[in-house]
Image (cartoon, rainbow, N blue to C red; front, side, top):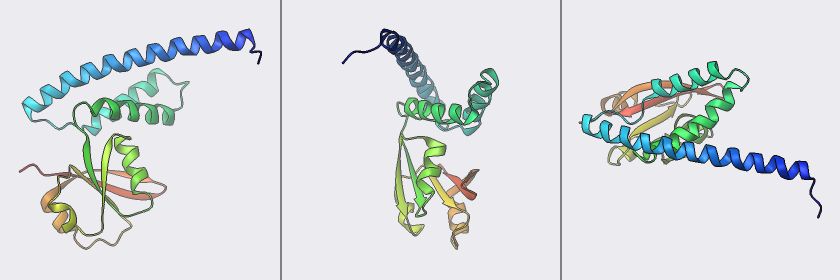
Length: 169
């Protein structure tokens, strides 16, 4: 098979760019580990949604030629992978066809999801966050509020989800 020399050269350029990206991700992970140690010492949250939104906004402003959705998807995964060196979150999700998509939109791929039907199923588990769709008839919202605090709302495919953070006791 004969490969065009230009194609080969362009692929080599891409390989060099990929190498640089991987090296930068490794540098990012080392810094994240340091931040994780500080967060542990100061008992701060590992997930700070405002910080992530700040990153997406800053990058979208700095690089207007990149679609903001592309920035969000790529950097959600980079942040998720980096954060996995600090902590991998356990997320309880209500059984709903968009729950896993919503979870991935928020936390990326590096988290564990636990599907539940009844709030009592998750109370005894080591759950960090709870994600429930607003369109589900959910009678135990008061019980959720005693164990979890509302952190943020996310919309996926016109369905509102509420993300709750477990209250640290």
